[in-house]
Length: 289
Image (tube, rainbow, N blue to C red):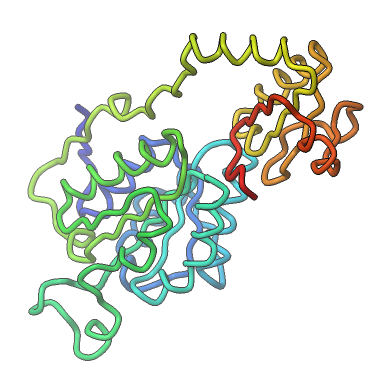
């Protein structure tokens, strides 16, 4: 356990947690519901790990986090303000869902306690369950109304986003826990205990059976889709295709096979699949498409 001896507020502890998670950047369009966290990132954390990337719109913030994941192969944080910021972000979150991108979207709500609500603005911008707006296209969502629950939610969120099948998660923070004055140092859990689960491995018997089918087939075909989520898989497919002279059809949702390779026959689906006696589908989103 590591104590944060300098932290004064709940938002300071969250910054310490983000540093422990090695979050490099946070994309955001400023909003009052996370003003304390915004302040702590700059004035407590020194605006370094995480560093703020200022965006004019929440959809852009999500897209930047999505692009960062594509380039760095690790999740980035995006902050969205209350109900309206989340609604702005929905299209970009959906795109990340379809692309299986492990984004962590951190939202916030105005105070849930009635006595803490400001007249008018906190009533029209605050929802008891903001996650309903994106629940159908995120991997997991949670509402944290206390500092311990916020710590647990962030740890679980980063863990689940990066566990196969990867995808975006949404966590909503009550504004009250961010401005909570600490009465004593807060201990952070051991981050290593929240590592993503190991990738699922193929059944050895099924792999052996598939290999036999490919070797014995007269007209085998490979259909690949999201293969480059693991970059090493592309090279393995090239090796397999060359070994057995397998024609490969790349669905194109994510790079799966070099289009300059002579065994890339993308575009000849009708001819190849019509006569195929064995089809090897590798991480295909929908075979019926």
